[in-house]
Image (cartoon, rainbow, N blue to C red; front, side, top):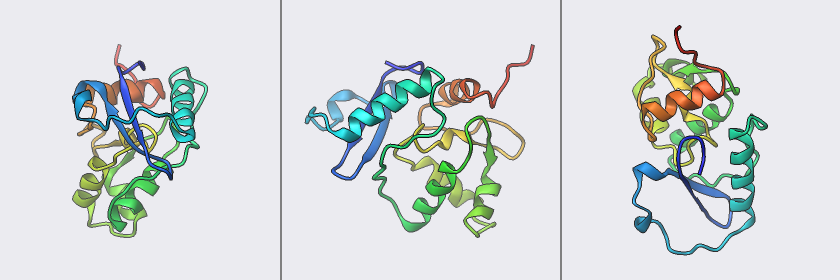
Length: 153
């Protein structure tokens, strides 16, 4: 259990390939193999450290499968520092395709390893919170946890 509810991790022989929010997935639909491996152990440890405020960068190996464009976007997401946000247009410029703002949004939404590849750090051009696989309330909690979003008093 994390600060944002239960999380489910999936791994391959090469790294973490899925992170799912418990309230968004039916556990019975996940693969039944519950065996642990070094990637699952490391990811669990790093997620605990992240939520305790002791980790800002994830080091666990990732095996996120997607198109070449998606992998380019996910690489740029991983470069967004803890406590900072970027707009979709900024990511499009980083992948050298400034007109691909919507495609960046689609690739961001297809990220299979949320939190570890921090797609929650991408916000609307006007600073608004936009789509997130775990839901906007969890996105808000993650950004607040990182100090990237403050509540108005």
